[in-house]
Image (cartoon, one colour):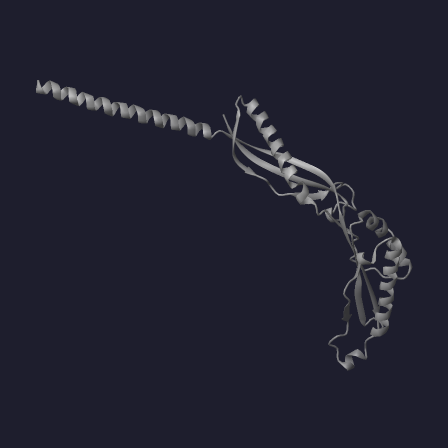
Length: 248
C-alpha cells in the first residue's frame, strides 16, 4: 500500500514537471515566433519638395584703386563710393539699405629700404580696396539694378575681379519645416504600404524614423548663372524622411 501511494505521489510530481515544461516550451516557441515576426521590417524613404523665393538679398559692390600718392588715391576712392551711393539711391534703394565697407590699404613696397625704393616706380605703390554693401528685402530691385553694373564701369569705377553679384537668402525655413516633414512622412508611409501590399503583408508600427537634413538648392540648376544656390532667387527646399516599419 505504501509502495502504491509512493508511485502515485511520484507520478503527480512528474505531471507537474511535465506541465511546467510544456508551458515553458510554449512560451519560448511563442516568443520565437514573435521575434521572427519582429524581424520582418521594411525601410522606406519619403521625399518632400517645395519651391520658394528668396526674401533677402545681400549685394557687395567691391572696388579698388592703384596709385603712387596715397592721399590722392584715397580721394579718388571716396569719390567713387559717393558715386555708387548716388547710383543706388537713384535706383530706388533707401539709405538704410546701403552700408560702406571698411577700407583696406596695401603698400606694395612695405619693408623696402630707401635705397631699394629709388629703383622702384612709384605709380602703383598703393592699393586701396573698399566697397558698398546693399542689404534689402526688395529682392526684385536688387536683381534688376545688379544687372546695370556696366553703368558704374562706364563712369570710371573699377570693380574688383572677385565680384560675383548678389546673393539671395531664404530665411523662412522654420515656417515650412513642420508641414514638409509631415508630407515626407506621408510619402514614406505610402511607399511602405505599397511594399507591404506587394509582399502580401500589412504595415505595422514604426520601428525607427529619421527626419534627414533640409537642403536648399537652386530651382533651375540648368541656368549657369543661378546654378549656385546662393545666387538663385528661386530655390527648392528638400527633405527626406527615412522610416523603418514592422511588417505584420
